[in-house]
Length: 154
Image 1 (cartoon, helix red, strand yellow):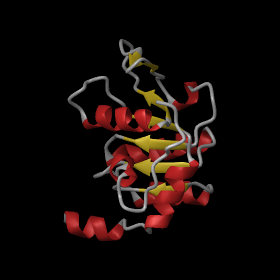
Image 2 (image 1 turned 90 degrees about the vertical axis):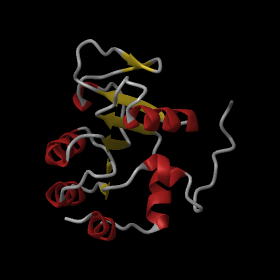
Image 3 (image 1 turned 45 degrees about the vertical axis):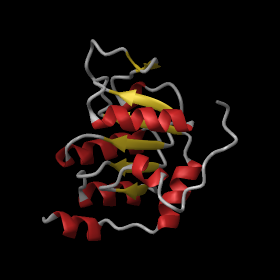
Image 4 (image 1 turned 60 degrees about the vertical axis):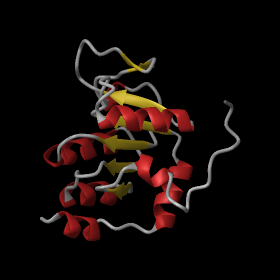
C-alpha cells in the first residue's frame, strides 16, 4: 500500500491522541533498543525525559538496562501495571503483541510509524483497548494540541 494511503487510513483525531498521551503513565516499549543510533532509543529517551514510566521490552539476554532503566524480556515479565504498549516491531508481529497486551491488561496498543495490522487492531479494540497505528508518540507530543507537563520535577 502506498505510504499516502496508509497515512489516510490511520488518521486519528488530535483529541483522541492527546487524551491517550495525557492519560497513560506507564509505557512498555516492545522492541526497545540500547543502540543510541536506533529510532526506538530516541523515542524511549524523549518519552522518559517527558515523565513517562518507560518499560523497555527486549528478549536479548545480554541487554539488562537502557538509560539506567531495567529491560524486561517479555510483557508478561513486567512487575507493574502497563497503561500502553508501544510497538517497534514488524507489522507481521503486531497481532502477537496485541494478544500479549490484552493478556497483561494494557489500555492502549500503539504501533510505531510503518507498523500496522487491521486484524491486530480489531482484536485489541474488541478487548477494550484504544489502538493507534502508524504513528509515533514522540512526534505527537509536540503537535499543537499538546500541553507541556510543567508540573514535573527537573
